[in-house]
Image 1 (cartoon, rainbow over the protein chains, first blue to last red):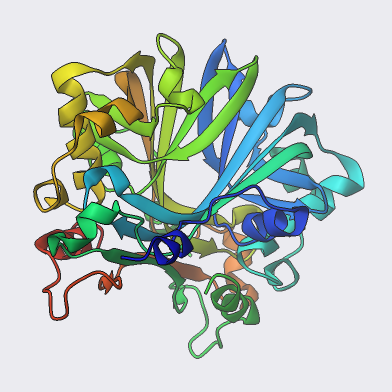
Image 2 (image 1 turned 180 degrees about the vertical axis):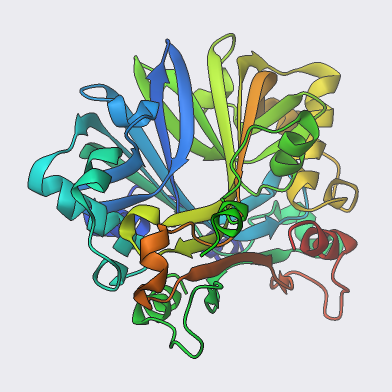
Length: 211
Length: 211
């Protein structure tokens, strides 16, 4: 084996620039939100959307998250793209894109709330907010949105084949990558959708966005 | 519309018994691990495995996570299965299975470390640890495993179509579920795998496990 070639196979992991971090955030389906509750760490999955350097998190007004204001918060978004099967357990890994953002929770109200609510719907189904019945004042009151203004962010990306010890490459063991794919499918209409109603444009947009 | 029928369409969200929580943990690809670092919440994605009531988390010995011992820790695992498109932004949701476990970080060593390292490899590729070159003493030293003995756990599951306001059902707006599927594909062998080497059994096992 040629060491140079082996080096060329090194996995890539790094911190990335803002555009890379934003792309990972924008391409994620679920945000994993961490905060401190009763002096213990708490992590819950949440719907979210990014607007410039701010993350909007959605929760019912009654939930703990919606009451968070002024406390430190973290959100992690990860897309797993492959399982890396090496010749040793030690060199097993996964291919992924991951972003972690830190900030302070800020309760959202007024015009910013309207914008945030539409953006959270449109994050998963681009354009959906314009396809549906407008939000009522009652619904606005019942929906809590917390903003996380990004104060610090980092990203990690791992791609490529396993990076095995030179001595293991000759063992004749299968090594490579097992692809993991997340896909958005065709919409399944419910019993209240008019027969023959065309699938709305937002669903095709979601398939393109999360392909 | 018949109220009874509408009620029958209610989304299911609940806390679940141990077997349900274990099934969600065992079916997850990535664990989202929360802990407190410098008085701030931190969430990082990690490979993991469950053994009875204990979660094993893998990290290089040098990383912060591997040095955690005796501190409170949380792990959340979520499988998103659909985007729920309602007739109002307010009733948009996602279908998912999610488990959140709480415990205290415990540094793992000795025989338990050997078991944990194999289990973490086998979680993603069942049986893989027996297909590869055994771990060396050096590698054991370089690998940190943290145990999270589950002290408290809960699960949430949302399934089914949107739950719209009665008045919105007649609007003629498309409503339903957009399926989200995560799939494990066929292995892509690297340049050091012998020509014609058959795909190892662990890869097919992973496709079955995460189907």
